[in-house]
Image (tube, rainbow, N blue to C red; front, side):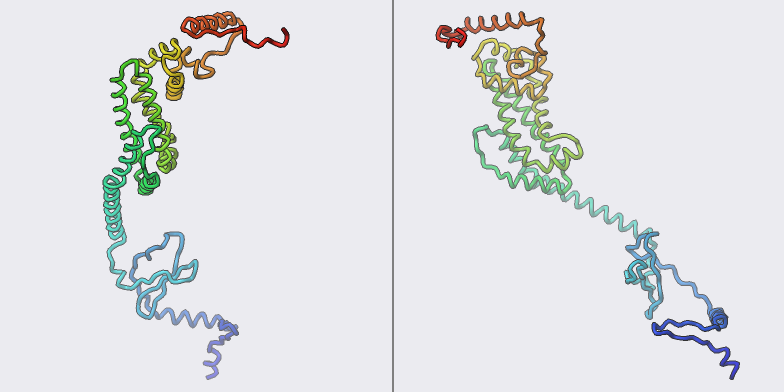
Length: 342
């Protein structure tokens, strides 16, 4: 009996229920080792990883429950994240299950994208196309009824649904077709009306862009500027230069030079509008008629040179003579106010 009492385990319990062994700790270790050596190790089936886990980042521990299953504890927070039963261990391999899920997701995304494009073609773009038509054919003095808030809403939805590229292509194609019709109309204009008709086309198109560009602000900001590194208004003005102005510049320039040499044959406001418009489209066109463009655009000619002052004076006298011969007298110089020195 005394030997048994000496071999007993002397384990003390503190107030926190932490069991501490006494000096007979070596006996405790030998006793536990002998007991554990008799237990036959049973290999556990390999269960698939817990969904949602991050490999190599967050590790957990499995412990047996009363129902024979296993619970997963998050080592970071100490909370239960999922429960895996023994029946889950017989599930198909993770690779095959993942492949099936991926194929299903791809099919779903493809179907949703096809439905979104169909909705764009049937609803969004037809409404935008009608509004663009009305804005392109309006006159600067007309006030047409267009719901800018509705157009803005359609553009916003198209951009949010990842149709920015499709919308941009449709917009530029629509305006290109319109400008080709404008060019055909100018081709049939008689020479005496060509400058005036060109000015009307340019003025009308510029006024239309003042309405079109703002309602396509989202397209300009989130696609054209961010991805194409361009600006919507500049792109649309380039369309006018390519499909209208460049085609007719060789016809327009001689008419402008002739009209400039005969004052008031064309209204000064029309002359200024056309010349400034051409310069804004392509500054290089100023080199085709420097004398014409210098009358409306500053700093077209090179800087004055002192040695050429007599030539400048002769040019001014020639211009005054031409004005006098065309019915523009200088007036009665005798009524001019005398200077203070006289």
